[in-house]
Image 1 (tube, rainbow, N blue to C red):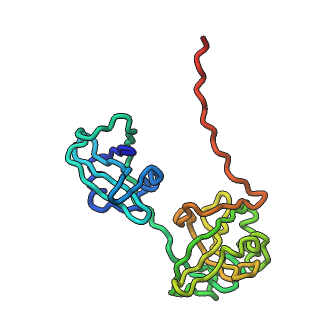
Image 2 (cartoon, helix red, strand yellow):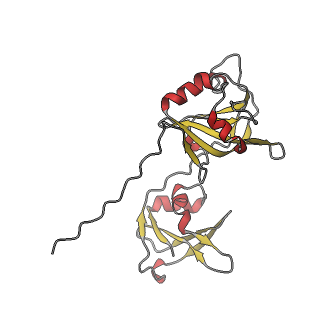
Image 3 (cartoon, rainbow, N blue to C red):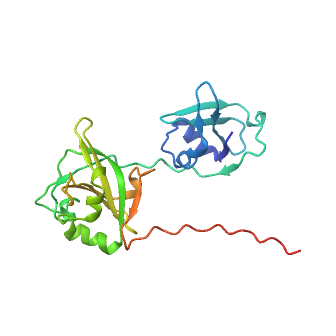
Length: 234
């Protein structure tokens, strides 16, 4: 057993109705779960506060494995960490976008240009690389830089292509340090945004394990150092 998750009774009932792999607590604990059919399962035990019954959840590469337990007290949980959480709803991810050919301004992408009505057809996409600009650089990129050559698009040209078989854009996400919105780019072998789409909220994009590059002067956020407890003086 990897961890025990304790929910309120209402949250446990909600989870029991539909166990989605998109629940944030499952994503947060993905690294400690594993599933080997016919072998070892490292799983989460999820139960309601004050209740005996529980749910066992293990996650493999592409699916969840679920089990049911009548009484958690019959399981040896000595040394297994516990965590009490409120159940957060699964995040609604942006899976599709409208890619425009040779846009010149952000308004060409976000529906604000009346001369470029938003087409009904949207296509799927997959982010292969994230490029973070400082806020001022990103503002300039949105307003005047879409049609200009960009060194970071040249550098990541191998991360951008369109797959006609699956109708999927493989693209670079360009975003700012502090803002939520971003621009999905397929330069199609060029160094400017030959095809681009608007992403209103980068938190709703699937970016797990996607490499991130901070274009100078943008800088990666500093990781907080854990404070070590001082040993008492003898």
